[in-house]
Image (cartoon, rainbow, N blue to C red; front, side, top):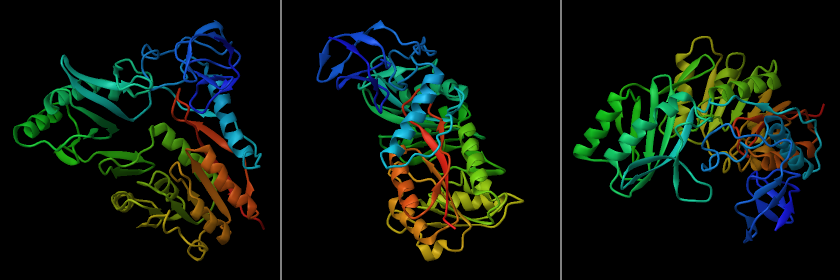
Length: 404
């Protein structure tokens, strides 16, 4: 078939006549065989002016990136459009600011696929829609420290996995060295555990967890958040880049302004709460007790912060109620992809003066923003943020103000 690409889908694929064309851009003419609604290996007959040579040598085989063949300006505009369309579907049309794109080579954590094959360990990312693992020693997304760790991960896989076994490896860059957590396998015992601990120690790994158990730790794996240093619980959520975390914190602080009492909901380890506490009293709520403990420990150890309180609370089942929210000048909310429908209704009932909203899902954000605007809130400009370079993901920050 010969097709002309009409638009990009949510995963960054070209779409023409309801057929998905991976790697194609709007306006391009492509040719190829179609099966099950997908043109798997399209030939580009008429390229888009936005098409560029992918900057990464692994782009053709690795499934980690979806848009390396598109110019940065095109991707930024497309992601802003994704946000605008999600809002329009809820009847909202706020100003959409130009996308803020984070630099390449800054990803501070990544989950690698790993397998011990016949010829040795394989560590990398999956090929698109495949169980095959593609090694990525020249990845343009990862921080150089993570790329440098790939041989160490291979040594751990070789020593710790049985033949043909597979695992996932979450690797996080911290101030004390790498924090490595291997999941999908049983905890090691005896000589195997000792061998893994020796490999980690020789490589300067801060902590190695395997199958849910800590095998070795040379130092607490800490990350810097504002003035604070936070000890990471194993597997805790962390923003993909330090630069992205700092940008989100700056945008949220600007939205909150001079508020004296702030509630930070879905607070995690304090990515937003700790910077906010440099100028305001903060109460944080987070569902995971270990992350609450890490946040409070960092707050206590950091001089110069205002009062920080926190509670472990499932905000999906037990949102902060309007009566509890009434004492705050501002609320910051940064929920998972599902959004925070129940919590947003309570915020609207409480008429908290300022609501700073952070989201990794434009669709659930638009639904929650609609709850606020229906209650009379005014939604200000929306700032798209591209932390996940060359992927179809987009984050955003916006501020809603209560009616007088």
